[in-house]
Image 1 (cartoon, rainbow, N blue to C red):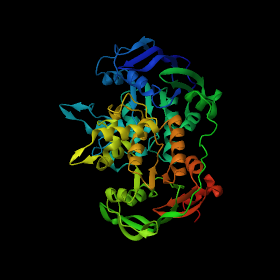
Image 2 (cartoon, one colour; image 1 turned 30 degrees about the vertical axis):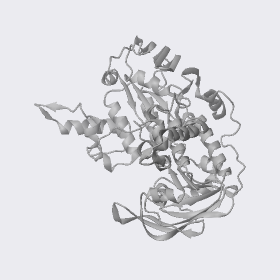
Image 3 (spheres, one colour; image 1 turned 120 degrees about the vertical axis):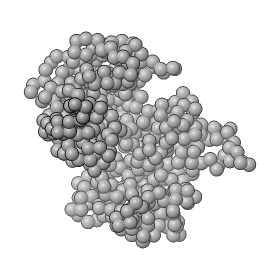
Length: 512
Protein backbone atom coordinates (compact mmCIF):
# COMPACT_ATOMS: atom_id res chain seq x y z
CA UNK A 1 0.00 0.00 0.00
CA UNK A 2 1.09 3.58 -0.48
CA UNK A 3 2.74 5.13 2.51
CA UNK A 4 0.35 7.21 4.60
CA UNK A 5 1.70 10.72 5.20
CA UNK A 6 0.20 10.93 8.70
CA UNK A 7 2.68 11.31 11.55
CA UNK A 8 2.48 8.37 13.95
CA UNK A 9 5.36 9.46 16.23
CA UNK A 10 6.84 12.80 17.12
CA UNK A 11 9.67 13.51 19.54
CA UNK A 12 9.58 17.10 20.81
CA UNK A 13 12.67 18.42 22.62
CA UNK A 14 13.30 15.11 24.38
CA UNK A 15 16.13 15.28 26.93
CA UNK A 16 17.33 12.46 29.18
CA UNK A 17 19.86 13.06 31.94
CA UNK A 18 21.89 10.64 34.03
CA UNK A 19 24.28 11.65 36.84
CA UNK A 20 27.03 13.61 35.10
CA UNK A 21 25.81 12.70 31.61
CA UNK A 22 23.21 14.07 29.19
CA UNK A 23 22.34 11.05 27.05
CA UNK A 24 19.77 12.93 24.95
CA UNK A 25 19.63 16.67 24.42
CA UNK A 26 16.60 18.40 22.90
CA UNK A 27 15.96 15.66 20.30
CA UNK A 28 13.08 16.51 17.93
CA UNK A 29 11.91 14.63 14.81
CA UNK A 30 8.92 12.87 13.30
CA UNK A 31 8.20 9.37 12.00
CA UNK A 32 5.48 8.79 9.42
CA UNK A 33 2.86 6.07 9.63
CA UNK A 34 3.70 2.93 7.65
CA UNK A 35 7.32 3.86 6.85
CA UNK A 36 10.58 2.11 7.61
CA UNK A 37 12.54 4.76 9.47
CA UNK A 38 16.26 4.32 10.08
CA UNK A 39 17.97 5.74 13.16
CA UNK A 40 21.75 5.78 13.12
CA UNK A 41 24.63 7.30 15.01
CA UNK A 42 27.84 6.32 16.74
CA UNK A 43 27.73 4.36 19.98
CA UNK A 44 26.67 6.76 22.70
CA UNK A 45 24.73 8.95 20.25
CA UNK A 46 21.46 8.38 22.13
CA UNK A 47 19.74 5.74 19.96
CA UNK A 48 19.20 3.20 22.73
CA UNK A 49 18.12 5.87 25.22
CA UNK A 50 15.49 7.16 22.79
CA UNK A 51 14.15 3.66 22.16
CA UNK A 52 14.02 2.91 25.89
CA UNK A 53 11.87 6.01 26.35
CA UNK A 54 9.59 4.90 23.52
CA UNK A 55 9.28 1.30 24.76
CA UNK A 56 8.67 2.21 28.40
CA UNK A 57 12.00 1.24 29.97
CA UNK A 58 12.33 4.93 30.94
CA UNK A 59 8.76 5.97 31.83
CA UNK A 60 7.12 9.37 31.57
CA UNK A 61 8.51 11.77 34.16
CA UNK A 62 12.07 10.46 33.99
CA UNK A 63 12.85 12.58 30.92
CA UNK A 64 12.10 16.08 29.67
CA UNK A 65 10.15 16.93 26.55
CA UNK A 66 7.25 15.13 24.90
CA UNK A 67 6.65 11.96 22.90
CA UNK A 68 3.51 12.20 20.75
CA UNK A 69 2.02 8.89 19.61
CA UNK A 70 -1.05 8.79 17.36
CA UNK A 71 -1.73 12.44 18.15
CA UNK A 72 -1.59 12.06 21.94
CA UNK A 73 1.24 12.42 24.43
CA UNK A 74 2.69 9.06 25.43
CA UNK A 75 2.72 8.86 29.23
CA UNK A 76 3.94 5.39 30.11
CA UNK A 77 4.07 4.53 33.79
CA UNK A 78 6.99 3.09 35.75
CA UNK A 79 7.84 -0.50 34.79
CA UNK A 80 5.58 0.02 31.78
CA UNK A 81 7.12 -2.16 29.04
CA UNK A 82 3.91 -4.21 28.89
CA UNK A 83 1.87 -1.02 28.72
CA UNK A 84 3.89 0.08 25.67
CA UNK A 85 3.18 -3.29 24.03
CA UNK A 86 -0.53 -2.91 24.81
CA UNK A 87 -0.43 0.50 23.12
CA UNK A 88 1.09 -1.13 20.01
CA UNK A 89 4.78 -0.32 20.52
CA UNK A 90 7.08 -3.37 20.48
CA UNK A 91 10.84 -3.78 20.42
CA UNK A 92 12.98 -6.66 19.16
CA UNK A 93 16.35 -6.48 20.88
CA UNK A 94 19.73 -7.52 19.46
CA UNK A 95 19.98 -10.23 22.14
CA UNK A 96 17.05 -12.54 21.55
CA UNK A 97 14.76 -13.20 24.53
CA UNK A 98 13.18 -16.53 23.54
CA UNK A 99 12.95 -19.61 25.77
CA UNK A 100 14.88 -22.26 23.81
CA UNK A 101 13.13 -25.36 25.21
CA UNK A 102 9.64 -24.12 24.31
CA UNK A 103 7.90 -24.26 20.93
CA UNK A 104 7.56 -21.33 18.55
CA UNK A 105 3.87 -20.97 19.42
CA UNK A 106 4.51 -21.10 23.16
CA UNK A 107 7.12 -18.33 22.79
CA UNK A 108 4.90 -16.15 20.62
CA UNK A 109 2.04 -16.15 23.16
CA UNK A 110 4.11 -16.53 26.34
CA UNK A 111 2.16 -14.99 29.22
CA UNK A 112 -0.87 -14.38 26.96
CA UNK A 113 -1.90 -17.94 26.19
CA UNK A 114 -5.57 -18.46 25.16
CA UNK A 115 -7.33 -20.13 28.09
CA UNK A 116 -10.67 -21.94 28.22
CA UNK A 117 -12.09 -23.31 31.48
CA UNK A 118 -8.75 -22.72 33.20
CA UNK A 119 -6.77 -24.72 30.61
CA UNK A 120 -4.54 -23.45 27.80
CA UNK A 121 -6.26 -23.99 24.45
CA UNK A 122 -3.25 -25.27 22.49
CA UNK A 123 -5.21 -25.71 19.27
CA UNK A 124 -6.04 -22.01 19.26
CA UNK A 125 -2.50 -21.05 20.36
CA UNK A 126 -0.93 -22.86 17.41
CA UNK A 127 -3.65 -21.78 14.96
CA UNK A 128 -3.17 -18.12 15.92
CA UNK A 129 0.62 -18.48 15.65
CA UNK A 130 0.29 -20.12 12.24
CA UNK A 131 -1.97 -17.27 11.06
CA UNK A 132 0.61 -14.62 12.05
CA UNK A 133 3.51 -16.52 10.47
CA UNK A 134 1.52 -17.04 7.28
CA UNK A 135 0.31 -13.43 7.06
CA UNK A 136 3.86 -12.10 7.10
CA UNK A 137 5.34 -14.98 5.08
CA UNK A 138 7.59 -16.32 7.83
CA UNK A 139 8.74 -19.83 7.01
CA UNK A 140 8.65 -21.29 10.54
CA UNK A 141 6.55 -24.09 12.06
CA UNK A 142 4.57 -23.12 15.19
CA UNK A 143 5.37 -26.57 16.63
CA UNK A 144 9.15 -26.35 16.22
CA UNK A 145 11.29 -26.22 19.38
CA UNK A 146 13.11 -22.87 19.34
CA UNK A 147 16.55 -24.28 20.18
CA UNK A 148 16.42 -26.26 16.92
CA UNK A 149 16.06 -23.10 14.83
CA UNK A 150 18.81 -21.06 13.22
CA UNK A 151 19.38 -17.47 14.33
CA UNK A 152 17.50 -16.10 11.32
CA UNK A 153 14.34 -18.04 12.16
CA UNK A 154 14.66 -17.13 15.84
CA UNK A 155 14.60 -13.51 14.71
CA UNK A 156 11.36 -14.22 12.85
CA UNK A 157 9.84 -15.69 16.02
CA UNK A 158 10.77 -12.53 17.96
CA UNK A 159 9.05 -10.41 15.30
CA UNK A 160 5.99 -12.70 15.28
CA UNK A 161 5.85 -12.37 19.08
CA UNK A 162 5.74 -8.58 18.76
CA UNK A 163 3.13 -8.71 16.00
CA UNK A 164 0.95 -11.04 18.08
CA UNK A 165 0.35 -8.04 20.34
CA UNK A 166 -0.92 -6.04 17.34
CA UNK A 167 2.18 -3.87 17.13
CA UNK A 168 1.67 -0.66 15.19
CA UNK A 169 5.29 0.44 15.75
CA UNK A 170 8.03 -2.20 15.65
CA UNK A 171 11.54 -1.25 16.81
CA UNK A 172 14.35 -3.46 15.49
CA UNK A 173 17.67 -2.99 17.31
CA UNK A 174 20.62 -4.40 15.29
CA UNK A 175 18.41 -7.13 13.78
CA UNK A 176 21.04 -8.49 11.36
CA UNK A 177 24.13 -8.59 13.60
CA UNK A 178 24.20 -12.42 13.67
CA UNK A 179 22.46 -13.20 10.37
CA UNK A 180 23.86 -14.64 7.16
CA UNK A 181 23.43 -12.77 3.87
CA UNK A 182 20.50 -15.01 2.87
CA UNK A 183 18.85 -14.48 6.27
CA UNK A 184 19.29 -10.70 5.96
CA UNK A 185 17.56 -10.76 2.57
CA UNK A 186 14.71 -12.79 4.06
CA UNK A 187 14.36 -10.29 6.92
CA UNK A 188 14.27 -7.39 4.46
CA UNK A 189 11.41 -9.11 2.64
CA UNK A 190 9.50 -9.53 5.90
CA UNK A 191 9.96 -5.85 6.76
CA UNK A 192 8.63 -4.83 3.35
CA UNK A 193 5.62 -7.05 4.04
CA UNK A 194 5.08 -5.34 7.39
CA UNK A 195 5.15 -1.98 5.65
CA UNK A 196 2.47 -3.15 3.20
CA UNK A 197 0.29 -4.08 6.18
CA UNK A 198 0.71 -0.59 7.67
CA UNK A 199 3.22 -1.42 10.43
CA UNK A 200 5.72 1.36 11.12
CA UNK A 201 9.24 0.03 11.58
CA UNK A 202 12.11 1.82 13.32
CA UNK A 203 15.35 0.27 12.11
CA UNK A 204 18.61 0.65 14.06
CA UNK A 205 21.85 -0.78 12.67
CA UNK A 206 25.59 -0.19 12.45
CA UNK A 207 25.57 -1.73 8.96
CA UNK A 208 24.98 1.48 7.07
CA UNK A 209 24.51 -0.20 3.69
CA UNK A 210 21.29 -1.75 5.02
CA UNK A 211 19.66 1.67 5.43
CA UNK A 212 19.87 2.14 1.68
CA UNK A 213 18.28 -1.26 1.07
CA UNK A 214 15.26 -0.93 3.32
CA UNK A 215 14.53 2.51 4.84
CA UNK A 216 12.36 5.35 3.56
CA UNK A 217 14.01 8.01 5.71
CA UNK A 218 16.92 8.27 8.14
CA UNK A 219 17.43 10.22 11.36
CA UNK A 220 21.03 10.82 12.45
CA UNK A 221 21.87 11.32 16.12
CA UNK A 222 25.23 12.59 17.36
CA UNK A 223 26.23 13.15 21.00
CA UNK A 224 22.59 12.91 22.07
CA UNK A 225 21.36 15.49 19.57
CA UNK A 226 19.24 15.09 16.46
CA UNK A 227 21.42 16.22 13.54
CA UNK A 228 19.10 15.61 10.60
CA UNK A 229 16.17 13.63 9.25
CA UNK A 230 16.18 13.13 5.50
CA UNK A 231 14.64 10.86 2.87
CA UNK A 232 17.03 7.99 2.22
CA UNK A 233 16.96 8.84 -1.49
CA UNK A 234 18.69 12.17 -0.75
CA UNK A 235 21.63 10.55 1.07
CA UNK A 236 24.59 8.39 0.10
CA UNK A 237 27.01 6.37 2.23
CA UNK A 238 29.73 9.05 2.35
CA UNK A 239 27.29 11.80 3.32
CA UNK A 240 25.69 9.61 5.97
CA UNK A 241 29.05 8.72 7.54
CA UNK A 242 30.25 12.33 7.66
CA UNK A 243 26.93 13.43 9.21
CA UNK A 244 27.21 10.73 11.88
CA UNK A 245 30.78 11.47 12.95
CA UNK A 246 30.76 15.21 12.29
CA UNK A 247 33.81 15.06 10.08
CA UNK A 248 34.81 13.71 6.72
CA UNK A 249 36.42 10.29 6.73
CA UNK A 250 38.78 10.17 3.78
CA UNK A 251 39.13 6.40 3.96
CA UNK A 252 36.92 3.79 5.59
CA UNK A 253 40.00 1.59 6.03
CA UNK A 254 43.09 3.64 6.95
CA UNK A 255 46.23 2.47 5.23
CA UNK A 256 49.04 1.52 7.55
CA UNK A 257 52.74 1.29 6.80
CA UNK A 258 53.13 -2.38 7.48
CA UNK A 259 56.17 -4.35 6.37
CA UNK A 260 55.49 -7.99 7.32
CA UNK A 261 58.63 -9.94 8.17
CA UNK A 262 59.44 -13.59 8.70
CA UNK A 263 56.89 -16.33 9.36
CA UNK A 264 56.41 -16.65 13.15
CA UNK A 265 53.24 -18.75 13.44
CA UNK A 266 52.13 -21.80 11.45
CA UNK A 267 49.11 -24.09 11.44
CA UNK A 268 49.55 -27.28 9.40
CA UNK A 269 46.65 -29.57 8.39
CA UNK A 270 44.79 -29.10 11.67
CA UNK A 271 41.92 -31.48 12.49
CA UNK A 272 39.76 -31.24 15.62
CA UNK A 273 36.61 -32.72 17.17
CA UNK A 274 33.66 -31.00 18.83
CA UNK A 275 34.42 -31.19 22.59
CA UNK A 276 30.77 -32.12 23.25
CA UNK A 277 30.38 -34.60 20.40
CA UNK A 278 33.34 -36.86 19.64
CA UNK A 279 31.67 -38.00 16.42
CA UNK A 280 31.61 -34.51 14.89
CA UNK A 281 34.74 -33.10 13.28
CA UNK A 282 34.79 -29.30 13.48
CA UNK A 283 38.13 -28.74 11.71
CA UNK A 284 38.88 -30.90 8.70
CA UNK A 285 42.29 -29.76 7.57
CA UNK A 286 43.27 -26.12 8.10
CA UNK A 287 46.66 -24.74 7.08
CA UNK A 288 48.06 -21.20 7.07
CA UNK A 289 51.05 -19.20 8.21
CA UNK A 290 51.37 -15.76 9.77
CA UNK A 291 54.24 -13.32 9.39
CA UNK A 292 55.62 -10.88 11.93
CA UNK A 293 53.74 -7.56 11.82
CA UNK A 294 51.13 -8.90 9.40
CA UNK A 295 47.33 -8.72 9.41
CA UNK A 296 46.03 -12.03 8.09
CA UNK A 297 42.32 -11.93 7.31
CA UNK A 298 40.21 -15.07 7.62
CA UNK A 299 37.06 -15.05 5.49
CA UNK A 300 34.27 -17.57 5.08
CA UNK A 301 30.54 -18.02 5.36
CA UNK A 302 28.80 -18.44 8.71
CA UNK A 303 29.36 -22.04 9.78
CA UNK A 304 32.61 -22.41 7.81
CA UNK A 305 34.62 -23.07 11.00
CA UNK A 306 36.35 -19.71 11.44
CA UNK A 307 35.49 -19.19 15.12
CA UNK A 308 36.02 -22.90 15.87
CA UNK A 309 39.51 -22.57 14.39
CA UNK A 310 40.67 -19.62 16.49
CA UNK A 311 39.01 -20.92 19.67
CA UNK A 312 40.83 -24.23 19.15
CA UNK A 313 44.16 -22.47 18.55
CA UNK A 314 43.50 -20.57 21.80
CA UNK A 315 42.97 -23.84 23.65
CA UNK A 316 39.32 -23.29 24.48
CA UNK A 317 37.33 -25.38 22.03
CA UNK A 318 38.11 -28.32 19.74
CA UNK A 319 40.02 -31.46 20.67
CA UNK A 320 42.94 -31.59 18.21
CA UNK A 321 43.31 -35.02 16.64
CA UNK A 322 46.05 -34.31 14.09
CA UNK A 323 48.08 -31.48 12.61
CA UNK A 324 50.68 -29.13 14.02
CA UNK A 325 50.90 -25.60 15.46
CA UNK A 326 54.32 -23.95 15.38
CA UNK A 327 55.54 -20.73 16.97
CA UNK A 328 58.89 -19.41 15.81
CA UNK A 329 59.54 -22.74 14.10
CA UNK A 330 58.93 -24.86 17.21
CA UNK A 331 55.88 -27.09 17.61
CA UNK A 332 53.68 -26.11 20.54
CA UNK A 333 50.77 -27.84 22.30
CA UNK A 334 47.98 -25.62 23.64
CA UNK A 335 45.36 -27.15 25.91
CA UNK A 336 44.00 -24.02 27.60
CA UNK A 337 43.80 -20.26 27.23
CA UNK A 338 46.38 -19.95 30.01
CA UNK A 339 48.87 -21.99 27.97
CA UNK A 340 48.07 -19.89 24.91
CA UNK A 341 48.84 -16.71 26.85
CA UNK A 342 52.11 -18.16 28.09
CA UNK A 343 53.08 -18.65 24.42
CA UNK A 344 52.12 -15.04 23.63
CA UNK A 345 48.78 -15.74 21.94
CA UNK A 346 45.71 -13.67 22.86
CA UNK A 347 42.13 -13.73 21.57
CA UNK A 348 39.58 -10.91 21.30
CA UNK A 349 36.43 -13.10 21.11
CA UNK A 350 33.49 -12.77 18.76
CA UNK A 351 30.93 -12.28 21.55
CA UNK A 352 32.41 -9.66 23.87
CA UNK A 353 29.49 -9.75 26.32
CA UNK A 354 29.54 -13.51 26.83
CA UNK A 355 33.23 -14.31 26.47
CA UNK A 356 35.10 -11.01 26.72
CA UNK A 357 33.70 -9.07 29.66
CA UNK A 358 32.33 -9.41 33.16
CA UNK A 359 29.68 -6.75 32.63
CA UNK A 360 28.91 -6.07 36.30
CA UNK A 361 32.60 -5.56 37.09
CA UNK A 362 34.46 -2.29 36.68
CA UNK A 363 36.44 -1.28 33.62
CA UNK A 364 39.58 -1.56 35.77
CA UNK A 365 38.85 -5.16 36.78
CA UNK A 366 37.97 -6.15 33.22
CA UNK A 367 41.22 -4.78 31.80
CA UNK A 368 43.40 -6.42 34.45
CA UNK A 369 41.43 -9.65 34.91
CA UNK A 370 43.54 -11.88 32.64
CA UNK A 371 46.78 -10.29 33.84
CA UNK A 372 46.56 -10.29 37.62
CA UNK A 373 49.80 -12.27 37.93
CA UNK A 374 51.59 -9.11 36.73
CA UNK A 375 50.42 -7.30 39.88
CA UNK A 376 50.60 -10.13 42.43
CA UNK A 377 53.22 -9.68 45.15
CA UNK A 378 53.35 -11.83 48.28
CA UNK A 379 49.81 -13.20 47.81
CA UNK A 380 48.22 -9.80 47.28
CA UNK A 381 47.42 -7.52 44.35
CA UNK A 382 49.37 -4.27 44.04
CA UNK A 383 46.32 -2.03 43.52
CA UNK A 384 48.42 0.98 42.60
CA UNK A 385 50.33 -0.88 39.86
CA UNK A 386 47.10 -2.42 38.56
CA UNK A 387 45.42 1.00 38.33
CA UNK A 388 48.44 2.63 36.68
CA UNK A 389 48.76 -0.07 34.01
CA UNK A 390 45.01 -0.19 33.30
CA UNK A 391 44.81 3.59 33.08
CA UNK A 392 47.66 3.61 30.57
CA UNK A 393 45.79 1.23 28.25
CA UNK A 394 42.49 3.05 28.73
CA UNK A 395 44.14 6.31 27.69
CA UNK A 396 46.01 4.84 24.72
CA UNK A 397 42.78 3.30 23.39
CA UNK A 398 40.73 6.43 24.22
CA UNK A 399 38.11 4.57 26.26
CA UNK A 400 35.32 7.05 27.01
CA UNK A 401 34.14 6.64 30.61
CA UNK A 402 33.79 8.79 33.76
CA UNK A 403 36.54 6.70 35.42
CA UNK A 404 37.86 3.15 35.51
CA UNK A 405 35.55 2.21 38.38
CA UNK A 406 32.44 2.53 36.17
CA UNK A 407 30.87 -0.87 35.36
CA UNK A 408 31.57 -2.31 31.90
CA UNK A 409 27.87 -2.56 31.10
CA UNK A 410 27.57 1.24 31.32
CA UNK A 411 29.78 1.65 28.23
CA UNK A 412 28.78 1.83 24.58
CA UNK A 413 29.56 -1.17 22.37
CA UNK A 414 32.63 0.46 20.88
CA UNK A 415 34.09 1.29 24.27
CA UNK A 416 33.31 -2.19 25.59
CA UNK A 417 35.29 -3.59 22.67
CA UNK A 418 38.21 -1.30 23.52
CA UNK A 419 38.16 -2.68 27.08
CA UNK A 420 38.40 -6.24 25.73
CA UNK A 421 41.28 -5.26 23.42
CA UNK A 422 43.02 -3.47 26.32
CA UNK A 423 42.82 -6.61 28.44
CA UNK A 424 44.55 -8.72 25.82
CA UNK A 425 47.14 -6.09 24.89
CA UNK A 426 48.13 -5.99 28.55
CA UNK A 427 49.12 -9.65 28.18
CA UNK A 428 51.83 -8.51 25.70
CA UNK A 429 50.91 -10.87 22.84
CA UNK A 430 53.08 -11.85 19.90
CA UNK A 431 49.99 -13.11 18.07
CA UNK A 432 46.68 -11.27 18.56
CA UNK A 433 43.58 -13.04 17.25
CA UNK A 434 40.58 -10.72 16.65
CA UNK A 435 37.28 -12.47 15.92
CA UNK A 436 34.90 -9.98 14.25
CA UNK A 437 36.51 -7.07 16.17
CA UNK A 438 34.07 -4.42 14.87
CA UNK A 439 30.84 -6.39 15.24
CA UNK A 440 28.12 -4.15 16.70
CA UNK A 441 30.48 -1.16 16.67
CA UNK A 442 29.65 2.18 15.07
CA UNK A 443 31.53 3.63 12.12
CA UNK A 444 33.62 6.05 14.20
CA UNK A 445 34.73 3.37 16.66
CA UNK A 446 35.44 1.03 13.75
CA UNK A 447 37.85 3.57 12.31
CA UNK A 448 39.62 3.87 15.68
CA UNK A 449 39.95 0.08 15.93
CA UNK A 450 41.34 -0.07 12.39
CA UNK A 451 43.97 2.56 13.25
CA UNK A 452 44.85 0.63 16.41
CA UNK A 453 45.29 -2.56 14.39
CA UNK A 454 47.66 -0.72 12.05
CA UNK A 455 49.65 0.64 14.99
CA UNK A 456 49.91 -2.80 16.59
CA UNK A 457 51.06 -4.52 13.41
CA UNK A 458 53.58 -1.75 12.72
CA UNK A 459 54.98 -2.38 16.22
CA UNK A 460 55.58 -6.03 15.28
CA UNK A 461 52.46 -7.72 16.66
CA UNK A 462 50.98 -10.26 14.24
CA UNK A 463 47.20 -10.16 13.90
CA UNK A 464 44.74 -12.81 12.76
CA UNK A 465 41.43 -11.10 11.97
CA UNK A 466 38.14 -12.88 11.29
CA UNK A 467 35.47 -10.72 9.72
CA UNK A 468 32.01 -11.38 8.32
CA UNK A 469 32.28 -8.21 6.22
CA UNK A 470 34.14 -8.83 2.97
CA UNK A 471 34.96 -5.13 2.57
CA UNK A 472 36.65 -5.18 5.98
CA UNK A 473 38.67 -8.28 5.13
CA UNK A 474 39.89 -6.74 1.87
CA UNK A 475 40.37 -3.28 3.39
CA UNK A 476 42.47 -4.33 6.40
CA UNK A 477 44.38 -7.50 5.49
CA UNK A 478 47.82 -8.09 3.98
CA UNK A 479 46.81 -11.61 3.02
CA UNK A 480 43.51 -13.49 3.15
CA UNK A 481 42.85 -17.14 4.03
CA UNK A 482 39.40 -18.40 3.03
CA UNK A 483 37.60 -21.21 4.86
CA UNK A 484 34.92 -23.50 3.43
CA UNK A 485 33.21 -26.36 5.25
CA UNK A 486 35.67 -26.44 8.17
CA UNK A 487 38.86 -26.42 6.10
CA UNK A 488 41.14 -23.86 4.48
CA UNK A 489 40.40 -23.35 0.80
CA UNK A 490 43.14 -20.95 -0.27
CA UNK A 491 45.38 -18.08 0.85
CA UNK A 492 46.38 -15.16 -1.33
CA UNK A 493 47.80 -11.64 -1.20
CA UNK A 494 45.26 -8.83 -0.79
CA UNK A 495 46.47 -7.33 -4.09
CA UNK A 496 44.92 -10.38 -5.78
CA UNK A 497 41.69 -10.21 -3.75
CA UNK A 498 38.23 -9.43 -5.02
CA UNK A 499 34.97 -10.05 -3.22
CA UNK A 500 33.97 -12.36 -6.07
CA UNK A 501 37.11 -14.47 -5.66
CA UNK A 502 36.63 -14.70 -1.90
CA UNK A 503 33.02 -15.79 -2.30
CA UNK A 504 33.98 -18.39 -4.90
CA UNK A 505 36.40 -19.94 -2.42
CA UNK A 506 34.02 -19.57 0.51
CA UNK A 507 31.22 -21.38 -1.30
CA UNK A 508 33.50 -24.11 -2.66
CA UNK A 509 33.00 -23.07 -6.28
CA UNK A 510 36.74 -22.76 -6.67
CA UNK A 511 39.75 -24.22 -4.85
CA UNK A 512 42.64 -22.00 -3.87
